[in-house]
Image (tube, protein in one colour):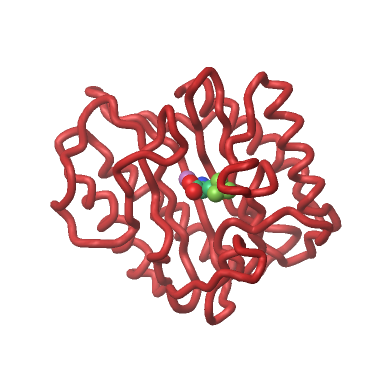
Length: 236
Ligand code: MF3
Ligand code: CO
């Protein structure tokens, strides 16, 4: 898990340098795919339920699962990049949202609150806590800043499969669900909207956008719960 997640982190680090005005999301996908393959890994998303690319690139009001295309990134856009790899039989999964050029202060706040909510969730991912302690911490952080948390998509267990039990919702009351135990590996991934939490799926069958077309951000880490606390596997 640590090895596959390290590759994910390295790809995201490499992509960050390629995020500039004028680059197309297809170019980002090509860069990521060749990086993954030259690391000896396989892109986890490509072919997953028919998904056509190695990266999800979700711009502005796109929440998750945006498909790379010839669309060019513009000054002021925010773009979420979500990457999964399979390496030596284990999956890693992570996402970040990045600014393109100079973005509005509201957009910057949306990104920082989303990242902060992931940190708040991870802080609760310790042995002895219950699963929904993570969920509730994320929701509390997001709503206290006046943003909304997406409900239609959730985090997940991860390991020999990309999506394993349990689901990890980003909302709910604390103290519910299974007890967290050493050895569990989870992908925690809050998706945060500036407006309402509702999302719809575009006609391509994949791209999730906010129903009110407000901006949305997404951050994700794969983490391991150990007896000595949490390890963020997709952080370099
Ligand atoms: N991080 C997302 C997830 O865990 C990305 C999946 S994209 C897909 O579901 F193409 F693989 F579906
Ligand atoms: Co995921």
